[in-house]
Image (cartoon, rainbow over all chains, first blue to last red; front, top):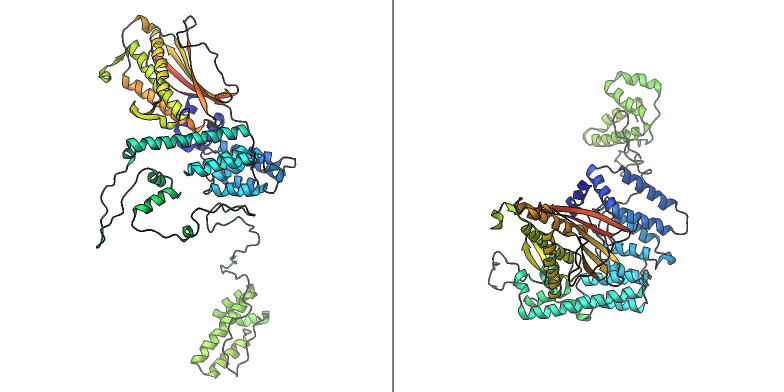
Length: 403
Length: 202
């Protein structure tokens, strides 16, 4: 017991917090599995879920998915690729998009929210959900949506979302009101704090980052972009790629260059998202060149024949160019001749030919290639030797049953 | 100066433990978001950065509790301290942080200091507080506004002081319990534990 207690603390960085908390025994189990590298039990359980998902034949197919997803969350505390959670959420979400009865089922809406939280652009997903009418009568949908706006620093939109929820009569009504009030309290407190800070102005000094050296300037221009890394600018850096419209504007006013944005020229405020048909789910992964799993049974791999030559699967039926042939020559026949066993005896006397013949006998398709090669060879030859030598050569070859 | 002392007395021990509760409770209130994070300020104690409330009412309340607790610790009459987190709306108990206190009553008779350096004790306390912080990895998110309550279990024959009322244990039904680390001053031993509502089975 005592050791297990230590275990969760030692791997605390590898445990993703869940909204609904974790089952401590499942957590211990998962961590031991993780340490031992023993995944057979987990795989078995997963297999069972997969089978159930496929074979389910009742009234409530969502139930299996719901349990499967919750199990995955608890079993893979570190998240990541092997948990397969993202794909699972994506599948579950896509599976029931057209099932009307689930659209305002709390379980389904929660799966959507988890899916959105896993996506780089959750707002897009929420908007899509609204267009499709998924979760529009569930309070938790509006809470998740609004919280996302709040996290991005857009408290006005966050407030509007709650108003939308109230308009749509989302249930439970009490909870929605309570969260709306809490948001308003947070915002007003923040405003108050900012006012106080404006008076005392202590806080920014504390968080200011000191640069190591001044930037050097080049040429005649002596203007240096001021380094301003306080407040929201810092948070911006920490937040990765999220663009923060407010801070961008702040920076723009400080720099000398005013960047013209033709989008802004037309509309000063961002256009309302249009509630038009939005059939396909917005793309979630911006990953390119991803190979999807596909059937492999029709794919041909070049095989090695017994002698080690690579067998060309479809033999070239005709050369793409017409080799030059002198008028006096007969055009060479392209089909390989059937080798007369009687001739073989003659051929066996000649050493270099015997090897070739054997190859030909084994694989008739290859004769075409050799034949073609000989034709080219003869054309090349004709450039250097007079006609009659070539004629004699080809006659001899004909005699041997080669051409 | 204290670090040069090799031993620990009952009085010192009571003070140390009371200090631990003061910082521990502050830490829990901050971590669990019972009070808004803006109302906390950072202080350095036990060689680590801790959050301490600046809310005057809460401060007064905690000072009262801790000073009373110190008395009880000195008398070795306290058995448990429990921090209960309840939902404001429904009054349901959501989380229960329990600290069991074992007092070595023999320390009351003999005033000879025990041999345990303050550094070792502080190391132990630090690891307890660290673990409290780490519990966010499995505790459920407290979505609704919450209130907290402190319960102190004392020996039976105690007179209930002013400002204190008797209360029930406020146990969570169907709870999940996780034992945390413990520390000892060699006079007082504190075992910590957190209980929370079980997540729905899957």
